[in-house]
Length: 98
Image (cartoon, rainbow, N blue to C red; front, side):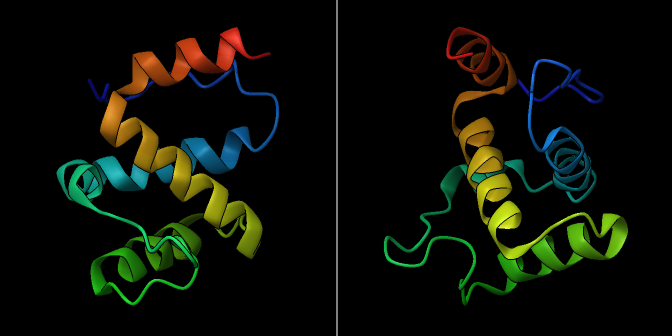
């Protein structure tokens, strides 16, 4: 469901951001946490008060430094989608919607 080193070449924009975030989520073993996480409807991930989510986003930014606020929010939504549906479903959806 969550391969160790998946290919993200099918992504047109933010490929490096998504790839780096995926690595951090995998290293921190946060897939189950993201699977059960319910982002705030009004502010999503960017203004989360959840210490584990804040730590995850800070770790992504500290290790790779590729993100603006917008790209981090979008990337976290992608990580949440992958946590809920798996990498294969994410890949199929992205390819289908190109």
